[in-house]
Length: 145
Image (cartoon, rainbow, N blue to C red; front, side):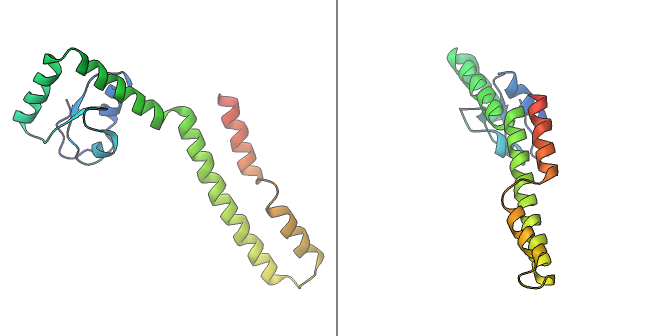
């Protein structure tokens, strides 16, 4: 049970969901991003009466707790697995570094004379190969797997 009216990250709820425990929660704060009523947890308003009704619902139906528990675990695995987090982090790095390379190349092009050898070399290099920090990060993630 997670009766919070304000929750920063909802890590306790996420931990319970990861272990397939059927959960009852409010949809306040960060918990709203984690729970989906009757699929990943039972979602109620923060009142004792509603929590009591949700507990009775779980106790009266033998299949309901297992279904909610499995749904919560599947959600956590889908959204927070190591592979998903690494892929998201790599995507952010690629986005930031590609913008940085484009900005740097644009600044260099503005300072170079048209047709100079340095200008042509910079234009050809930036779009073809990921930067060294990104290649190192991808190698590290591959090593961890």
